[in-house]
Each structure stands twice: as structure tokens, then as C-alpha cells.
Amino acid sequence: MAEASRWHLGGTPKHKLHYRKEVEMRTTLQEFLLYLIFLINLCILTFGMVNPHMYYLNKVMSSLFLDTSVHGEERINFKSIRSITDFWKFMEGPLLEGLYWDSWYNNKNLYDLKNSSRIYYENILLGVPRVRQLKVRNNTCKVHSSFQSLMNECYDKYTSENEDLSDFGLKYDTEWKYSAPIINSPWHWGFTGVYRNGGYIFTLPKSKSETLNKFINLRMNSWITRSTRVIFIDFSLYNANVNLFCIIRLVAEFPATGGILTSWQFYSVKLLRYVSYYDYFIASCEITFCIFLIVFTTQEVLKIKEFKSAYFKSSWNWLELLLLVLCFVAVFFNSYCNIQTFLLLGQLLKSTEKYSDFYFLAHWHIYYNNIIAITIFFAWIKNMFLAIINDTYSEVKADYSIGRRPDFELGKMIKKSYHNALEKLKLKKPETDEDKKRKSRDLAEQARREGFDEKEIQSAEQMKKWKERLEKKYYSTEIQDDYQPVTQQEFRDLFLYAVELEKELHYVSLKLNRVMRKVSALQ
Image (cartoon, rainbow, N blue to C red; front, side):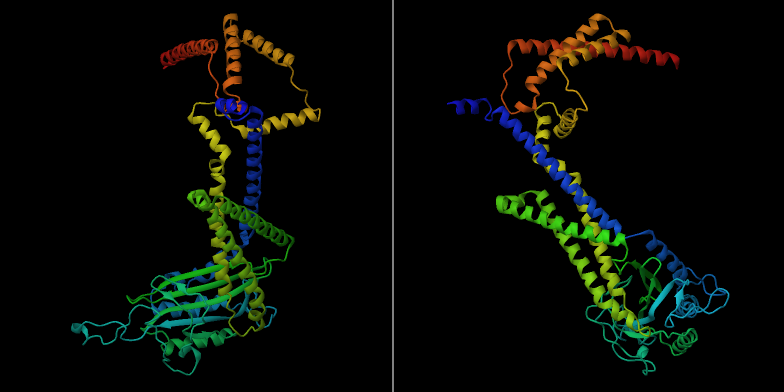
């Protein structure tokens, strides 16, 4: 019978309801702090992978190879190439001068490092640069019958089906013979097509003069033809001062419309990850990230087991799953990059006479950077809406809808804990009834000094008493869910309270009107 009576009055004893609210708030605070630590760790990982040296290295290299003009012709640089003639001038001018730094500014020889060039004296050219061309077959498009007498050749845009696989020209060296593409090499997305690996390939000699002669020989024997659709210039650098690799690709596309479209890629990446103390700190953050990932995954698995199909009806649960998937993909990419770097770096550095294909490693590092950027974006979205999807904050939101006082209980709990801690440490005395009365008297004295009369002060004190008495019954967090009937005396107090508030509002309105009239008179 007692249980039935309690159910009729609200269903939950006051002390148990208060305990449940405290537990909910404490759990909310713990979850929020845990996720905040995870978010800080993720930010450290994201921004710890980049540094200003990457920007400056890209800047100086792009300035050297993109903005340097042909000697005697200021209008021609890589960005402004529009014809085959301009392209060969760039190859024999700015590219050649930019790749081969064999003497100091005072013409003294540079110290030798296995005959490697040192661009800007600080950046070691790894291996030798590579030049690669892709062509299309003749008759890959059809010439209209009215123009067949004027033009009997037709070269369509580049596709893997239209690609020319036959040898051409002199046919005695690699630049004239087709090389099959490597299976796992990434394709290049250009302006007018998506280009695969392979093609007609040659590497540049170590000697500057030999390279110049090779360029002249290719130009004189028409290595670039009407069927040419793209030329790639690839090379890689390493700067030991900042422990960065710079992978550079210059691209010249020859569309079917004629002319040349140029593009470029400069990737400064840190392939040698763990060198300094800061690098080992980042490694510890990576381990912490994996621990968080295991904890969050376990939590979501338990939720799915508990709620089953109902779990997937919430859009925020889908956000949780998306965030977990992105985290796992980021871990996979990071692990794959580190493994491939460990396996390939030694092989790529063994021979200085061959092209070192670091583009493959840079490509995967860029994928990893993109994934981690998307991950942190969704992680911040979850952080911003954490209060909304939490049950405790939903109850606070419900308080707004039914007209109760919208107290922010989490802040109240923290403030209450802070004051309790000070009292226990004897850094603050507990507030007694006498202290409250003294504060009330002090406020009254301050009001008298500011010109308020006794009637106004007594009215304010009466309103404060009504407010405290009403809050104690209707706004208390301990009895929010209990039914509370209004007595006749309480209704009278509420009515008088409303009347006094109306008087105060009218008084403030009169003062405001008086001030506005004075302001208008001054104008």
C-alpha cells in the first residue's frame, strides 16, 4: 500500500531520486572529461605531423622549379608553358639549372656525397630524376569524310584503352620503348585524364652536360609527337636539417585540343618518424589513441548487445560508428605507411644511379593526412553535440519545455563540490544562518546608502522570502519529478509576488521613459 501511495505521488522516493541525479551528473562529467582527453590527444597527433618547415621547403622548391624563367626570355617558366618549344626551353634551362648544383656561389666545387647534387646546398637529390611520357594510338578517333583529304591522322584524348604500347622513333633506348606499368603504383588525376604508370621512360645522368646533350638529342629526334598526351618529371629530395623528404612531380599535359596544360605536386613528408624526443612523445600519443579506440569500440559493442536494433535508430549512434570506422582506417593507413617506409627506404637509398620512387610513399602519407583530418572534423562535431545527446542534458532541456527553472546542474554540482572541498580543507568556514542574516543586513544598509527608502527595501525583502519559499518547493532538484499541489496560501503568495513584480516593471519602465525624454531633449 505504501508503494502504491508513493507511485501515486510521483513514483520515486526523494532521497533515491536525488542520488540518481547525482550519479547521472557524475557519469556525465566523467564521460565528457574522458572524451576531452581523447580529443586533445587526437589534435596533438594531427598537428604534430606538420611543422612550418614543410611549408617553407615547398615554397623554396616551387619558386625554383616553377617561377624561374628561361634565360633571356622572362615570360617563359614552367607555369607559362604553352607550346612544345616552350617545354624544351624549360627542360634545357630552368630544370637543368635547378637540378644540378655542382659548385658554390664562388665557383668552388661542392663536397662530394656519392656524386649527388645538393639543391640550394642543403637538399640532397635522391637517386636521379625520371622523365616519363604517355601516348595514344593513331585512329583512336574518326575524321569526318569532308576533312579526310586534309587530315588522315586522329589522336583522341588519353584513356587506358587508347594508350599506345608500341615502340617508336629510334627504338634503341628506354625512352623509345614502352615500359609496362607497375601494378600497385597510384594513378595520376590530371586536368584532361587519369594517367596510369608506365610509358616511355628515361632517367637523367649524373652529369649536367650529359643531361643537356640528352635533352638536345630527344628534341632533335622528335621525342614529343602529336600522339603525346602527358609528360611527368619526378624526383625526390632529402633535407637532413629538418628531417624532411620533398617529393616533386611536374606534369605537362598535351590535350587533344592542342597546347600544353601544366600542373605540379610538392609533398614534404616526414618518412623517418621517430628521431627526436618530440617524435617519441607523438609515438606515445599514438599508443594512447589506440587504447582509446579499444575502449570506445568496447563501449559501442556493449551498447549494440544491450539495445540491439534500437541502437541503429539514433543518428548519433551512427555518428559514433562513423567516427570509429574513420579511426580504424587512420590506424591502418598509419601502420601501412610505417611498414612500407621501413621496407622500401633502404632499397630506395641503395643506389644513387637509379630513380628512387618516393612518390608511392608520399601518396599514402597524403591519404593518411586526409583521413585524420576528416576524423578530427567529426570528432569535434561529436564534442559540440555531446551535451545534446546525453540523457542528463536532455532532462535539462525538458525542464525548459514544462516551465521549470533551467538550472545548469553540472555547473551547480562543480560549484558545490568546490565549496565543500574548501570547507573540508578548512580554507573556508561553513555558512551559518547568522552569516545569511548578516549578508541580508549588509545588503539593506547598502540599499539605504544608494537612496532606496524603507518601503522599497521591505518590499524587496518580502519578495526574496516569497521567491526562496517557492523555489524550495517547486524548483528543488531533489523533487523535480514529484507531484506538488498548490495550497490556497501559496496561491495567494504567488499572486502577491506577481503583483509586486508588475509594480517593479512599471517603475523601471517609467524611469526608462524619463531617461529617453532627457536624451531626446539633448539632441
